[in-house]
Image 1: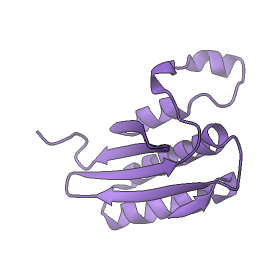
Image 2: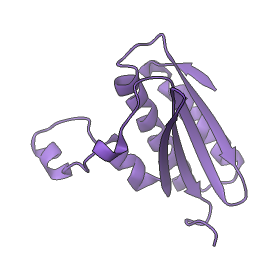
Image 3: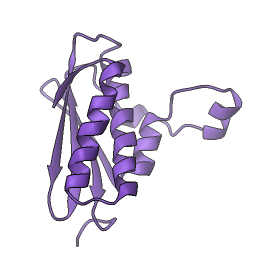
Image 4: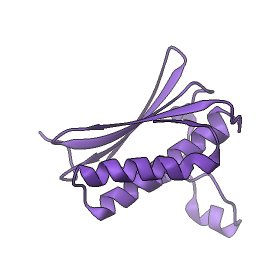
Length: 137
């Protein structure tokens, strides 16, 4: 699915992912974790990659097999540099009552695997849940 880069469309993405995950037989807890992580990833694109430019688009796709359920999120905005990301001090954010700053941290906590890459001007985030909680092998 493709949505405009605006927060009012995040509900559509959550529903899209939840319906696909449920159809694939994922447990309710996994479905909820996927919904939250996907919303965070898309919100990060809207705020950081596109700087709130609602004329841009976000592409969201689901890739599922017997081992894993992956949500792929693509954008053509400013690339994210994961190596420059420091894990936030959650207690300090709460103490200062600061919102934001937990998106990547939250995604990593909710997902079994989070991958980020940029190729030829396209940013891609892969959010993966393994059906049995871990990769085969």
